[in-house]
Length: 333
Image (cartoon, rainbow, N blue to C red; front, side, top):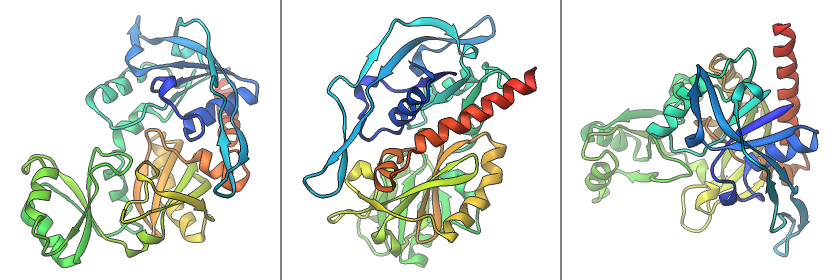
């Protein structure tokens, strides 16, 4: 197969952590051709989405002993080599992975419109552009009321205050945030409350999500990786120091964790919507047995799960892509 990855500049990626690199490595190890491009390079010409596609060859990471205990991934200093770019229609690829990191800005949304001009009968696009547009990573979870914490979305200070006073404690999340950015711990009676709400809502102009605070957050924020509606791996992210957020981007440490029956209940609750919207590769965030976010843009966690569990989620994912592409080809013949 020929697989294209729309990603951020490759020289800025961390091969020991980045799930996109893990997927590209897996594709290469399974004998497929890997190409890369960037969102701002896409164009629609003659009704087809085209881009300069750069062939890339990767040196896979290896495990080495960690002086602090356990193992860690090690990458070669020169871990990738790029060939010459060639302008091609994305439909020349068997599959295209949209793996540009959030936030979902206006240019990001425009990229999804460009990807609408890739014929899904010929080329698998994951995740589907319509699904990315439909699934704000905070708001999307609201449709699964039976498995989420009590939650409101508002830009009104009085509404937010009433919710926090009823809860005692709550967590505020910007709707367009990523990697824990802008998340605030709110407590009834905090003298900074008004200022925090004014800043977060841009003086009442932008809605925010406010969720019931889950005390279990101290025990970790579990990332469950879901492939085509099935849980395939999980990792626990635990806050460190005085930080209440477990995100790896803000220093949360990771530990091995099992996929529990409750996790599978949550996945079963969201799977029909994910499949409906073409959201094939997704990261669910679960705290205390409740769903807090649905990550659909470029979910991470593969490297950590592979290291802790001795698996290869990348190869599992690429094997699913192989089967799906084969089914597309059969349907077209």
